Amino acid sequence: MNVLEIANLSLRIGVQDILHDISLDLPEKGIYAILGANGVGKTSLMRCISGIYHPTGGEIRYEGKNIVGLKSHQIVDLGILQAPEGRQIFSNMSVLENLTIGGGPLKTAELDRVLGLFPKLKERLKQGAGSLSGGEQQMLCIGRALMRRPKVLLLDEPSLGLAPMLVRFIFDLVEEIRAQGYSILIVEQNAKAALRIADRAAVIEGGKIVMEGSAKELASDSRVADAYLGGHVAAH
Ligand SMILES: Nc1ncnc2c1ncn2[C@@H]1O[C@H](COP(=O)(O)OP(=O)(O)OP(=O)(O)O)[C@@H](O)[C@H]1O
Image (cartoon, rainbow, N blue to C red):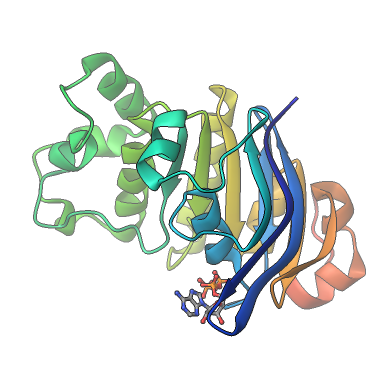
């Protein structure tokens, strides 16, 4: 079953066509990767799903129901949570405050579950979030989304600015999060890392899907290799 279905989605802002005829399905407990270079529309697609941008055409169905037109907070309440690009943590607040902000009364069980995934954060609960390393800030950003127990997690460039070792760590963690029953849509420029963990993937160029298939197919496609894997077909 698909938890999220995007059908013929288009987005126009002013006179600019940002997204055109985007269709993709996220299976329940699946990882779907959206690949592409800078500025092709990946973040805009995420923003359409989370209700920040309103698509000009098409549908976004969550558990079979079209969510286009709903407000961001309604989409969050339905169970679609985004860990945004650039992390957007509150650097002058503590790690604990960042994790618990906006979530109503503190849910200890949720906190324990999230901290179980991120032992590094557990050691730094009282510390100012601004003093965390880049990788830890990324964990905090994902952890904050998980505190709301989403069904669908939207990850925008989780590897951005991280050292290769940390990229591996973050992607292993995404796999672990999926194993806990979440469905994950991940936007990435790091095609190699994303294809390693994804079930399916799409490549976006100029606001359009130019390739779509299983992650295995895409990883062994010479066009993907040339454009996104530095000429090497990825070992899967
Ligand atoms: N609010 C907006 N107003 C005008 N143009 C916008 C707006 N949001 C996005 N765009 C344009 O849409 C295009 C796609 O941007 P988007 O941020 O979605 O790309 P991206 O693939 O996520 O790139 P990046 O990896 O740099 O975030 C860009 O040309 C951008 O300038």
